Image (spheres, rainbow, N blue to C red):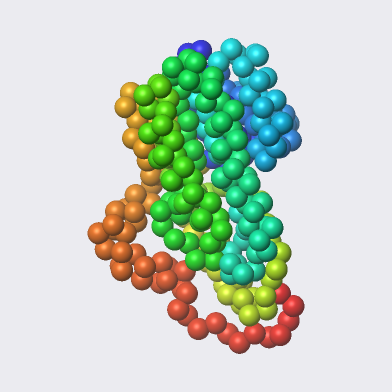
Amino acid sequence: MMNKVALVTGASSGIGEATAARLSAAGYVVFGTSRRGAAVGNRAFEMLALDVTSDASVQAVVSEVLRRAGRIDLLVNNAGFGVGLAGDEESSVAQAQSIFDTNFFGTVRMTRAVVPHMRRQAAGRILNIGSGLGLVPMPYMAIYSASKHALEGYSESLDHELRTRGVRVVVIEPGVTKTPFDANLLEPDSKIEEYRATRAALNKRYQEVVAAGDAPEAVAEVVLKAASAARPKLRYPVGRIATVQLLRRIAPGLVDAGIRRDLRLDVPIAASSGAAP
């Protein structure tokens, strides 16, 4: 991988940081990005400021990497965020649009900025960090799950377009991962009192699930595998989510029941106390 150049979005923490560090250790010249750019810390890769919701910012970063490194061999689209567990109607349309603007359209912007250079090289790889929730439903995270479903369809279609031009597009599908992702979750902006008790119960359960999740380094290892494979697969599930996806194909009713049981969705919710959400 010596002298290959990788650009990793959302690399200030979690999966993005672990991925950038792992690629750097494997010999890539790595440029990580975050909204704030360079941060205090001893990293083996350089950080650049990037807002994936801004066309100008995206173009500026891609141009800077090309100016300094001369090429981009690998793009890892990792930047994303979500809303804390809540009913779908508790997020305004504007909030839903903001999630898609980062999670989906941010990936589209980055991809469209990089693809012309990869086509000219007749080589390149684009790895989109999706989620197990891109194929498996997640109650009370409907918009986030929808953004990852959109990423699945976009990636698969784009791979067919670019494959004969030397560029491959891959989706990495982590399951629940122990990262600071939950620290960046937005509060729903249209809270409804009827959901208050459900929100509290689900967020408590979510913390338990995250504590037992995969380490971000496990995702980074799969990213490196997908980046270096001579014949990459379209999808790379990480950890236990692969089993869930298989079960959903052969026994969808079992998975449906399991989701409700695991999240305790059928446990009666205590009557609302009338307090503000």
